[in-house]
Image (tube, rainbow over the protein chains, first blue to last red):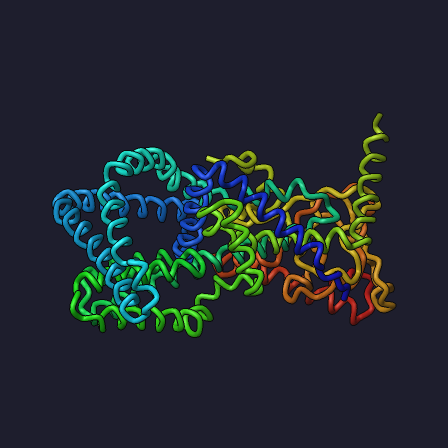
Length: 370
Length: 158
């Protein structure tokens, strides 16, 4: 069997550069990239349901339409019910928000005060008092400074969010046709390799998105149950928020843990043990993720070396800020698969020769009729 | 609604129905299969695939003619031309084995390719289509094996 040359350092470097360039471009058109990615995720998550119906004799297009319609109806019911619920609970939530913000501030100030007490050189710096003053000023100015920009941001993102179901519909219905359409433009010499590349990409993305969703559900379940056992209020919602925050590689889990610890410290100001138990729970779920859940969900394995992952995260933040942090690893995974395949094809002299001959034959065939 | 290419015409369904592998399929099933087929045109002398290439699917000749050039002596004794309706490369549909001959277009040839991964997903999604197509491929394989073993001048499997 013919063997293909393995991609080298140059391919890797090119993949890194292309990832950075794409991140830079994505940041400029984030209004489209975010709904596109959400639609892609939705599409891959709905695919098993479409296959389920297709296996039962419904044509692919009709199965896709039925699943999409069911999703729209369910979403509409949830949104309407959610709107009524949010209106009824708005006042209580505002009070809760203020309560937990001040709880978080107290936790930080108390932690600094405790450190000052134990580390004598820090006592003279008066760190806890300064921090407390800064936090109080910041929280007072927070509403007047940020409320309008947040409202405008939500308004700006609303049309983009509406794009998600629209894009997901066409991805479900037309993805096979789009693939055929793209493959049509590939020269005969590279045809089978292009098909293989599409298949690998499709498989990688499907594994990634479906795995991410499964992992989010498992994290939500375990964190929710654990937090409920510790007596934390809104345990399942907190578990869900922490599980979604964990989509941001590495630091997302830290944000989730901090959020839950703040809530635990506010709800149980006299029981430091609860906050520590929350931290232990997060560490345990993180270990479960790495050792048990990930092998099952597979998807997040993008076969990227850990050192390279960290390097890419730094590059992602540098190039595209928070957007880069979220997108850099899956994007790098996809670019690497494409880069390796393209490099293999480009370095295959036989394929190149076949392409050259095909072109000459095509020109000769056309010239015959002139 | 379709954004990518026009809807399949009756003529195309009839053409695919005329191919032995798809003859048992209903019109609706043909439409499902057609969505997975990739039409390619090869000029006279153009290589479709080379011996040793990793095989990822089969080709079905719609018009024109393909010829196989194997290095294996046993296969050289057989007639190695494939006309309209005939399958080429069916062995790789099952195990991605390397191609055992180089196949070249004898004249301008139009063929459709069925990719292994897409065929596998079709087998899962629609067992009825899968069984009908697989039986026809198995028939072709059986016929070609018998012909090769009996030394008849017909095409062996590729």
